[in-house]
Length: 320
Image (cartoon, rainbow, N blue to C red; front, top):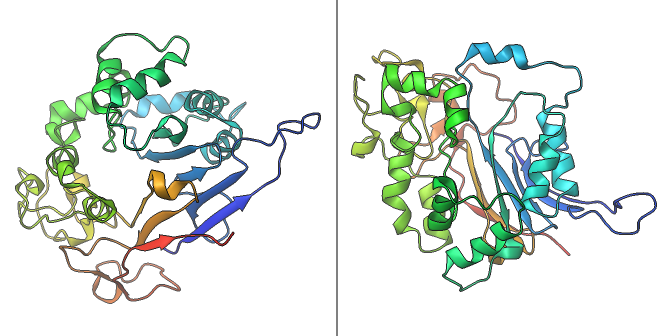
């Protein structure tokens, strides 16, 4: 939970024989001491792209045999290269996919602000222009239609694509444990679907991304849990607040050192100056603040941390 907001400006060229600068020569991102990449995977780039991802897990042990070190590059380095060299979302995906190590394969979301017009409400028209520029992507199926209708493919830490969903073993988890492991019926998806219409400005967006009212929200209840309220079932999870002596149908719902530890967001108005809103520490809007001295994890190493995490959002801006 010790983070540093960083801005890199590199005068790199596309090649030794070319004077054109790389598209992503300037980057702003949240990071940590001693690392040259984000780790949080949230980047604002001079290419006009904002790149971010959500974690998806693998529950199919049979897949690990395909992870081979020969000829592969770890995610963090492929991420750096794609961020620097890509000018479009498709280019980013093409570069990132090269030499895939097979590890840390999260669901990435690439926003290309070059195709966004402020004040223009016809999202279908704007998206169609983008789709037309990607050879082979104009296939009028359910996925294309959803993108045109919603403007994005949702990710709630669960794979969106059915083939990835099934290969990762999520279909078997749904059969065994129910909709908590499904894409659109898990608590986080339901809460987003219900609360997203309340977002009208930056402040309300921050509140949504930090939302956790597990004691009072019926969508946070857990069938088969005792107690039925569960701190994991929220936008910004607080699994540390679940009782250690509770009863839970599967491990993800138990008390554990897991949850949302920060929030970052940007907008069209902020991204042009590499600005963002950020807040560090687990959410405390509607739940008790995280405090090391009273936490069940007080014996974990936390050198340099404050005891109580009650930080408010800050606007990150940079000197010229």
